[in-house]
Image 1 (cartoon, rainbow, N blue to C red):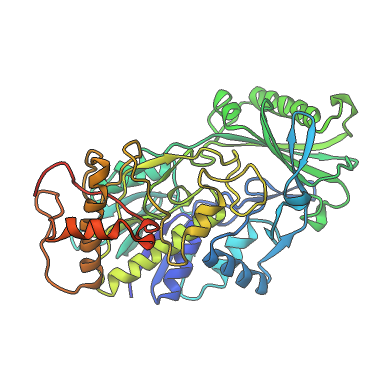
Image 2: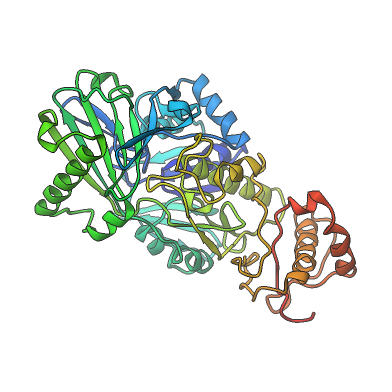
Length: 487
C-alpha cells in the first residue's frame, strides 16, 4: 500500500484520491481552500443567496465518466439540471440541443462545491487537510517526499502528486526530483476570467437559464442561479463570465483587486449583460448586491498530448488535471483516475512512465470550458465530443496525427526528436509499442534505453507495412520515437 500526498483538492485531485482508495492505497489530500476543498467547483453565499461562481454545470460523454456520474446521482451527490441553455449570437437566441443542451447536464445537489466535499467526506482511508498551504516538497535521502506547509512538516510520502496548476504548481515542482514535471508545467498557458455575480430584486423572466455569449461581447457565459438553489428562488442571481481576452486586458493581482478596477469591471460586464439579453441598461431591475472575482488561472489554453497525466517513475512524482485531457470536469476526473491507476500498476510491479512534453492548443472550447456531449453547443474541444467518445474506459488517448505538421510527443523521460518522414512514422510507432508492451507486461529482460534512445527491434519495418493496412492500428494511438538516427 502506497502513501500518496495529493496537493490540490479540486476534481482531479479528488478523483485521484478516490481511485487510489479503490485500489487499496492511502491518499492524503492537502488543499488551500479556507472554506473547504473544491478549487473551481466553487459555491458562495451572499445576502442569503447561493451561487456557483466558477463551474456552472458539466457533461459526460466518456463511458467511464458517464457511469461515474450515475453512481454519484444514486448517492444524491449530483442531479440532472433541466435548465434551458442557448447561444446568444448578436441579438439572436439560438437553442442548443432543442433548447435543453442534450443531456444530462449535471450540477451538485447543494452547489458545485458540495460534489468534491461529499466525495471526500465519504471516502474511507483518505485524510484531508483543508486550509493547508504547501510551501515546499523535499526529496528525502530515502527516496520519499516530505510535504512542508507554511507551519510545519506534514510527514513523508511514497508519492507526491501535484493536482493543480498555475504559479503555485510551478513553484512546488521547481525542486530536486521534479525537474521533468516542471519542464512540462512551464509550457502550460492559462486564461484569466472575470466573474461578476448580481442579484436582482425582481426576475428578468428570460426564456432561458444560461447562455453562451458569442463575440464581439466581452462576456462569454451568463447563468441564472434561480433554478439551481432553493435559497435563490425568491429573486434572481445571475453570474457573468468574461472572455479570456477581456480578462487578459484587465488582469490585476487576484489576491487584491483594486476597488476602482472592481467597479470598472462590474459596470462594463453589467452593460454587456444588458446588451446581450436585449434590455436597456437602465431597464434592468434594481440590484440588491454584486460580487466580483478574478480567476487568474482560470482554464488551460493548451492541453497535453498523448497522455492523460504525468508520472516520473524514478522519483515517484506525478501530476494530473483537466489540462492533461480537456478543460472540463470530465477531463479533470479522467486524468485523476488514470494517474491513480498508473501508480497502482507501478506498485504491482508493472513499470509505468509517462512524461509527455508536447501540447496542443484548445481551439474551440468556450472560455468557461469544454462540455463534451453538449448537443450543438459551442463549448467543445477541437476534437469535440468525438474525442471523449473515442477514449475507452481505460483512458486511451485518441488517434495521434502522423502528419509532419503535428506536434510530437516525448516518450517517458526522453527528449522529443524531430518529426520523421511520413513514410517512416509507423515504423517508429511499432518500436515504441513493442517497448511499452514488454515493459508493462514484464515479460522478458529487454534492452534498456541507451543515451536516451529506445532500441530498435528486429522486424519492426516489416511489421509496420503489415500493420499499416489494419483498421484497428489506424484507430490506435500512434506516437513516434527517435527516428532521426539509425540505431
